[in-house]
Length: 119
Image (cartoon, rainbow, N blue to C red):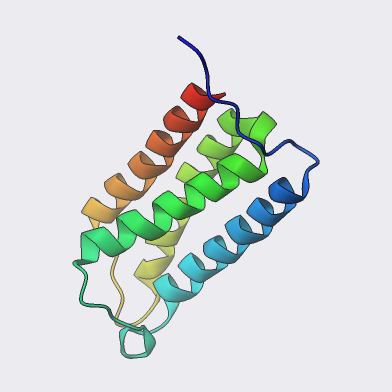
């Protein structure tokens, strides 16, 4: 079975763009997860879909940006997800959800598996 080669290499402009996007998305996750609920923008999308989308995009961007370190990226993103959910326990008006704690790391692992299958 032929493999699909992504046009992004470790030192390419695409890789740098993916890294910038990945860190921007991670920053957005931190801000949106830790601001008081009344300051957080809301969409018409279900909560689970919002989480799935931003964590999938973040995992994918990190996977493209750090192409040679998929294993390490996957582990760090799972830890990041846990840290974000845990940090919400200390923000008034926010609460950590067990469902989010399970779905977010799972999404990162699925992104990792998908990217590994392409490389």
